[in-house]
Image 1 (spheres, helix red, strand yellow):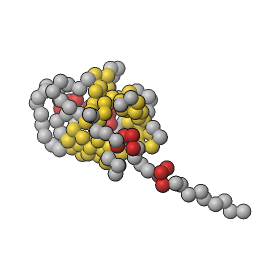
Image 2 (cartoon, rainbow, N blue to C red):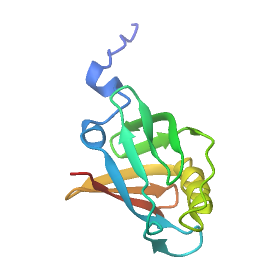
Image 3 (cartoon, rainbow, N blue to C red):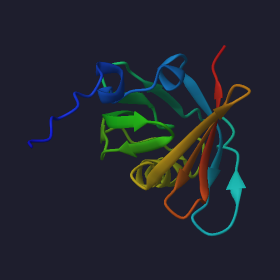
Image 4 (cartoon, helix red, strand yellow):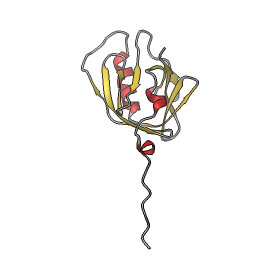
Length: 135
């Protein structure tokens, strides 16, 4: 007797999540890579927009970035981002913050959205970024 394959419903094959794509997100805290979550530098803004098409884009503090992502049932994978090539001196440290943010994005393994807060965590469960839904 041959086993028949069960077709996957189209909804289960989606690589995006309507909750993620519902709003642009603004960073409120970023992991420092050691042991703390810190707010973004005053005068800088980091945003994330999860497109229905699997494209993540936003502002990284100085440069704009774009990359691919897949999201399903709390699992999130973000590919390396391409950025514009501006150099910013103000606020001090913004380029280091941007490099850290972009590097941390590629370590994301899970996400949760609760009460208008998006939490991104790595494979060990370390929270690496917190975002608030933009108004």
